[in-house]
Image: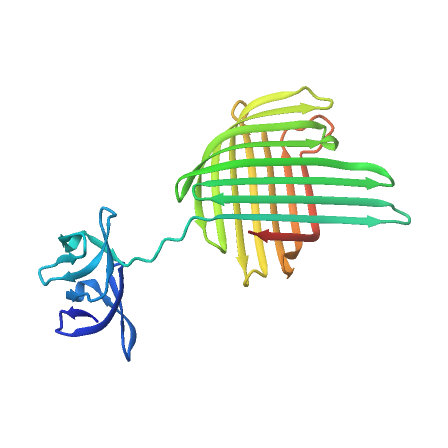
Length: 318
């Protein structure tokens, strides 16, 4: 069996499992597993084969011994060698898990229909998708809204947003994005934006994510009645999602603001704020507010549109 000697004169006999994070883990018959800080260990004699990892990332397997002067020595069929103790980073390290991707898709559908003295129909759909693999992240959003009042179409709009993030480091990223929107009842035939920028990943936990970003975007607007416009904008955006109560509740929010560089009074903004309440499995009740704002709409149209939504949604992570 392996033997481990400590500064207080104790000699522990058993099986040394590993050394990681400056701590030895060892099993002793009749006691079980114990942990010993590396700075309390003076000498080790291995009887079992062990794999030692050096600060250069080299793995050496053999029967190792640590002498009182802090030097490791190994004896195997290939080599006999010594190694200074400060060059050893781990023994029998925990195998690294292979990188995996994560995906999440969410769809929500909100609608209403009335008949009798008033005949109305309305429907709003939101689809969100996120894919993450190592340093890459792809995010997309699609929304669609439709309404009729006494068989006359009173609302029809469609929007889409796609963004790719690259993470040089865990806490910040570079991005490129493209977005498009059509809203005939706001006088907008088509609005497109394309840009690049950088962002901060403020939090990235399983239960809470939060990111903020800023960059430059080219914005083009084709109107039904007004003159078309093109401008360069400062794009500011953010996204947050907070899972509460063992996945029972999910709070979410995102916003995107475009500030014209040529005219600081020209502002376009979009925002969503909502709550998903789990019903069963991936099915949830969705309560949501969608807000869109244009500080300089075509003549005869209002600056803002607000949607208050209650409906059903479905989310799946894979």
